[in-house]
Image 1 (cartoon, rainbow, N blue to C red):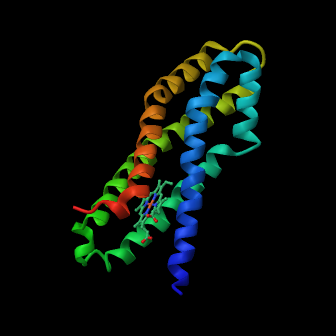
Image 2 (cartoon, protein in one colour):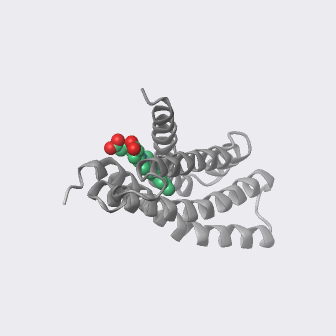
Length: 169
Ligand code: HEM
């Protein structure tokens, strides 16, 4: 039995499921709910970021996924030397990795701005000051494009990873 590959696959797929699942849940459910619930949403957001540490946990899952995935790719390609890289599955896992890296870059923007919004929400008493309002708008502006790009890239990464083994051409 190849224990290393079993452990790497478990870490890779479990952390990946947590990362992609969280991204989908936040984008499709939490964001519209926050927009619709004003003050209650602000309290929920403050708790999610400052007490539940959501951004740190998703960041850890993302890095575990990428590290274990990179290690698996290294093993499968015999240290980037074998013909596997140019086979259908090798290309499939490579394409999936590129999507995952796009998800990681834009996801880190989502994490930074979500953390900013959560911290601001925990500091604001009553109405936000003009300065706080400016910071909220700047963070929301970045989230408006980074969040869909990262979620779509991660869905495409998962779709490529899940089917790569059968890319036979
Ligand atoms: C840079 C990021 C990533 C790299 C380098 C990478 C690389 C790999 C590699 C090389 C494999 C084949 C493992 C084996 O030999 O059995 C694999 C499998 C897999 N990966 Fe990734 N991956 C990445 C991101 C992701 C993400 C974000 C997900 C989402 C959940 C994911 C889900 C999966 C799944 C489900 C499999 C199993 C596919 C199968 O057994 O046919 N990967 N990945």
